[in-house]
Image (tube, rainbow, N blue to C red):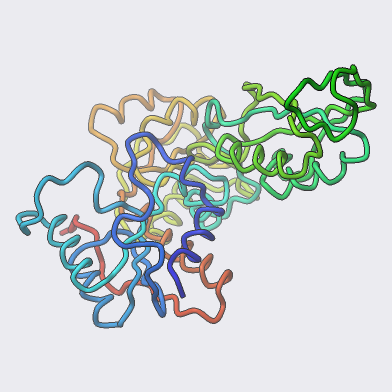
Length: 363
């Protein structure tokens, strides 16, 4: 299979436009027309993971963490990053990273954590700002249905769990074709009046180009009248972290034991504020920046990683912070990615790494 087909599916699932500004998600090594008989999924791409791909004759590695975050000036094998890139290129192995864009979708990294903790119907903890636009387009009445279908197919008209959402306003459009135009209706030099409708759709930022292109292709006029309007509505499907309620309250100590067993790690935590846990907030990876959001939704606990000593004081008697470790909080992302690819391509070989890439050891 061409890796382009795999990447297309991954990027529909977690659009690259949703990644953070510092990130480097996407195809890091390789070309879209490279072919592979399978993929190897890992959290990190180290030399040992590339060696594993070579051994298993797999020519595409899908990872959560990008191996390259900034520009490389030399390729002489001095650093592990250079050695990974050199070895991958030498053996014709593509490396693709799906990082904060998978963190920033409701069904991504944090959804997997919530499922393991026993939280259903979770929500985005910190909705992404400037993620939504309103697309308004004016179209003749008889072309309304075709244009709406085209916009829906291109990714417009989704509001939370609802699809094919739009609003229609009827009116009369006027225009006068001039020399050099090729009007579908009307005559050059004469003002024309046409019964039209204004269609309105909510569109995520990453789908703007596709939606506009689809609308132009479906619109009967030579010139399409439209506008994009930035809106401040919360993007319920996109943003950092997640929160939700357990089906039943559980004693703090019992919840702690559940987390310890599930994540297989030691936990650094602050004193519990309440005896029982019901509302849980999480952020896979480094999530201290979301503590304020976790407090705002009145979460009993905030599970994340990479907390520094002084940051624990920020709990301030209002929430319990649970730091389970970076690798530990994201370890289930490997299965999340593998499961998605297996469902999309059921006859394709999807392997998960046997290498533990956690750089931190515990004694």
